Image (cartoon, helix red, strand yellow):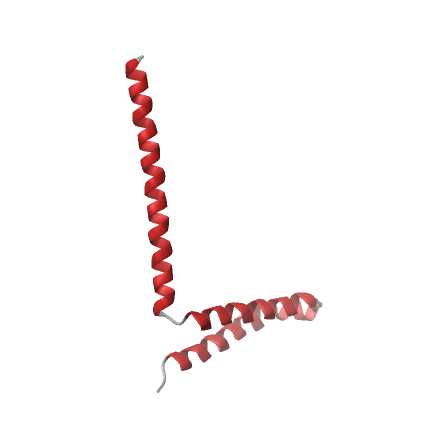
Length: 93
């Protein structure tokens, strides 16, 4: 009986350690992402996301067959144009 209780305590301890290790790893990843976003300019990234969401919402509201066929092409073109604008702002001549 003592041996079984000892094994249970060891298993419980391993479980606690693995959960703690996962939490620490997730925390480190969150800080790495925040640091990465602080190094680069955060505002243009959020602006791109907001603009893309607005663009998709407009297309979804005006849901006609011709617009739905053009959605993939126009979305790729839109993203390309927005990224080119950011590149020019980020790296002045």
